[in-house]
Length: 112
Image (cartoon, rainbow, N blue to C red; front, top):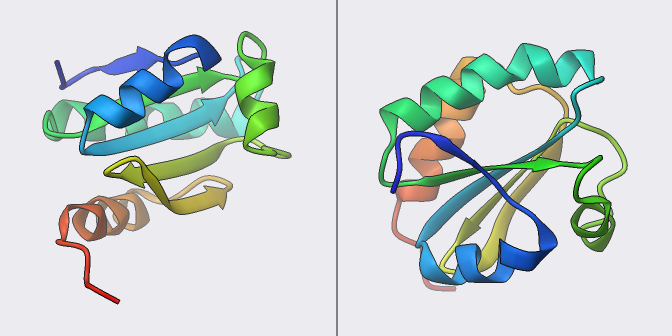
């Protein structure tokens, strides 16, 4: 499983985060212009990085999950490493910023 994006809801969120070492979630909505601008960047990264689970949380279809994470604006990206939230940012990331996030996510966690 990888290389494509997957819808994520409250029902399967915990299973997904617990069963994949690296997870990136895109909180979005169909009516959101910036979300539509970022979607091809997210999809291209999913194609290029089959080792990472790329999930899309439609805030209209899964308002409970968006609310649980207090998502106030979209798009919002969240990244998890070994079930732990390690990155959260609202707004559109430029492709090079997204590549940097993916590179950092793949780096081994530094003990601290």
